[in-house]
Every structure is written in structure tokens, then in C-alpha cells.
Length: 306
Image (cartoon, rainbow, N blue to C red; front, side, top):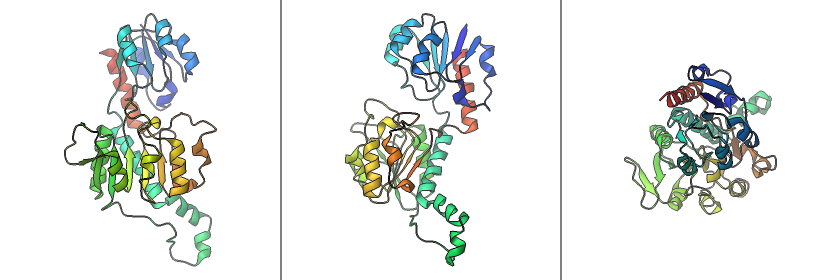
């Protein structure tokens, strides 16, 4: 049995991948571009991917392929319906990075909320020493306690963030689609009401037909000045051009760990934002606590074994 890992580098050099070798002959590729994927999976019985997209045409040419093991939760890099028609099984790893992504959500929040990088720079450059002032109140921040936090996507990660936000004293609400299921313990609001009333909004939803471009200028302009929006779901959910306008012209703060194109394109509007201290970006690392990365590999191996 041939097992092909198309983006082995994405798990990190500190992660043990040797368990795959107990299951068959393993082909390791550190990275794979969309154009390289077709040739590399032609003889594979099992393909292991994290971020690499596979087209239907490439799947047609992979005559031996029985299983696509996605070492991630999201499955938007393959056509699930087409795989079912072809008899190719799909296995993913849900909930492996719940705590890691929740932790990163708060890391981004606190950086934006209290502007700690600014204050760190203020001291290290000697500006504080020269000021003669015992403190610096130039960057105003608010308390989490008593603030409303709106969550879009109440899956495992969204609910974990809700628990932590509530522990800080936040009034947690969530986006409830018309006809959608209620989440016990939290109030469900329309998208409009959530954006109007929340001081913090965080996105933890998958990218689907119903969430694509869900958040546009229409919603962003409902946020109060100084509000914070965090996207740790998928980049295609949030209109990045509209976000740049909201940051530069309406006093919004934003933290992004996911983007419409990864890596970020050189001409991305996000790189031209004027108020750079209002925007914090990380390269899709929310999932990447070491424990979470080892867990996703171990559970992917179990998915293949079973």
C-alpha cells in the first residue's frame, strides 16, 4: 500500500511522523503545489493532506486512490460529493485543535485590546525613561468584564471560546441563522443585531456556501468605534477589502489568522492598511500548539488504520 503525504512540512519538524511507516510504503513531500499534486498521487492508495487542494481531474487520474486522509478539521480543499461518487473515502480530524485555537483567539485579542506591542516598544526605545511620566495612558482600552462578545460559529472552538469569554465576565451571544439550532446557555441573535451590540466579534465557522462572504461592509459598519473583530475560521467568510476600509476609516480593530489566499498575496489590500496598529495578522497558526499538531498526526494514522 502506497501512502503519499503531500505537505509533510506543514506538521512541523518537531512532530513524529514515523507511525505512517507502520501502515505501508510512505512517500514524503515537504510541500506540494496544486500543479504538482496530480502526478504525485497517481499511484497512491492513500493520500494524506493538510492544506493541499485536489481537483476532480487529479482525482480521476489517481486510479488506485481509496482514501484521502485530511490531517485537519476543514475539508474545503476537496470536492466531497465528487469523492463519494468515485468511491473515495474521506476522513478528517475534528476537534483536535480546539484549545489551541481558543488560546490563539485570546492571544490576538489581548494584543489588540491593550496594545502591548506599543507599550513594549515605548519602554525599550527609552521613550518612557525620557518622558518623566510614571505611566502612559495614550492607548485607551476597555475591560472584558461586562463587554458583549459575539461569536459566529458555535462548534467545538466557538463554544470553548464562549466558555473562556464568560469566565472573563463577558456577555456572550452568538449568530443564530433563521431556523438554526439554539445553543444552550447563550442568546442567539441575527447577524445585524450581533454586530450592532458586540464590542468583540470572533469568527470560528467553516467555509461553506452559506458562510462565504458572510461578513461584508454592511455588517462591519455596524460595529462601534474601537470594536475588535477576530477571524480564526476561514478567510473567505470576511470581505478583506471591506475590512481595510473599516479599519482605516471607522476605527475598527481586527485580528486575522486566516485569509482568502494563503500565503497572503503580495498585492493584498491588508498589506496597505494605513492604521497598522489596528490590524494584527498571524500566518494561520491558531491550530499549531505542539500538542495539537501531534494529535492531528496521531489521529490521522488511526483514521488510516481503521
